Amino acid sequence: MKKSKYKDVLNGPEVDAFLIGGGIMSSTLATLIHELFPSWKIQISERRNDCAQESSSSLNNAGTGHSGYCELNYTPEDKNGNIDISKAIKVHKAFSKSKEFWQYLIDSGKINSDIFTISKHISFVTGQKNVDYLYRRWETMRNSTEFMDLEYYYTNEDLSNQIPLMMEGRNNNLPCAITVHDGYDIDYGKITRCLITNLQKNNVDFNTNHEVIDLYKSDDKWIIIQQNLLTKEYSKIETKFVFIGAGGAAITLLEKSEIPEAKGYAGFPVSGEWLICENQDVVKQHFSKVYGRPSEGSPPMSTPHLDLRTINGKQCLLFGPYAGMSTKFLKYGKWTDFFHSIRLNNIFIMLDAGIRNIPLTKYLMNELFKSKAARFKVLKEFYPNANPNDWKPSVAGQRVQVIKSVDGKGVIEFGTEVVCSKDGSLSCLLGASPGAATSVKVMLDLIEKCFDLDAQSKEKLSMMIPSHYK
Image (tube, one colour):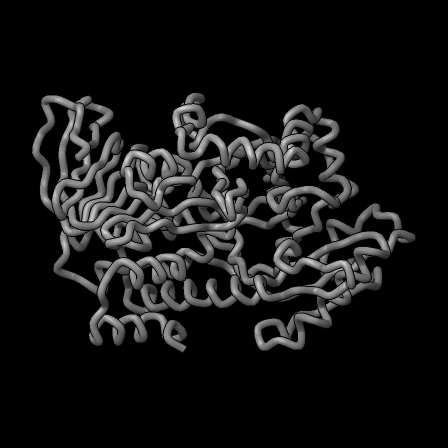
């Protein structure tokens, strides 16, 4: 049995649930647990000096209430021209659960009502081939209940009314088309802060500047060793349930747990960057989130989008993301993170995944060495009259894509995945997009996998999230 190697460890409290990470996932799970089991002692540990400092931060994510309206990578086309909308429907239903839960919390006076704003969700394509694809996508989607109100526009007049900023200075001879639906701009950082504040009011411990450095099972409990980064003191917490929601650092902590289910997982770090415009004369001309189509052969993470964002009460435009390579697992992580994650049980799938994804590596290398002029050229494809003086770069969040073994092959996953121990006492969230938008659905699935819910708990879930058992 694994034992702690740290000496002079202070004995901390014994809790029912210990959550690692102060982002949207941990705060959502803690809120659900508190609503279902109000007597439980819950502790959340965050290594930064506040919550929502990594992937949940407003400037570290796209802020999209992913509903499947505008994300073209959710609706792939096969070689016969058929459009598969199953993923778009799945994501739409997942985000609906998030909206229901947030509305329950708003109606209960537990979080603020200004956590999201209405924003048009628009898919934008150029070139006849892409225009044909978008039309077939629209025809397929509007036959489903979720997307029956999706609108399609292709004339220059209609496009100028919907996306005026993007149509100014554009070559009118190049075919363009869009689909439009009302959606949401979400401040996930604000949601996280509201959730944490409400939890603290209900005696949930939220410790900042604390880093979990080890965890192991002892009999029927998990032992957590964490360090206070200010005092450098170590403390030990005992708990019957652990959630690892530490963003990019989750893969390393999962490995430390030594549960059999952790074998064969690895992480592939990807950094990102935005261009931001705060010139209000420009901002007021764009009132939507516009997603384009990645160039052929590019990964889903390269999907370009020009977003109207409301961050800390101020509107701005974000364009990107520009992908890059980094060995950090967190934006505020260490350059050695990737190398420390390598183990005998995952090195071969990492190598296999690397060989199978050489085009992805080439894409990331090309992005890394792109000049400022080349990056700005991509923006001008969206917004032809863009002025370089109006835009400034900003480092976005750090993603760690999941690498896992599938039929003995190393596969890079671009979604979100939850790994649970067989007894349900430990769970770990890995991956990225659509992440925050589907946080409630992901955490509901986790709860039902790890906890035994009685009739009363299920009734409470149905009251909070009416669509959950439908």
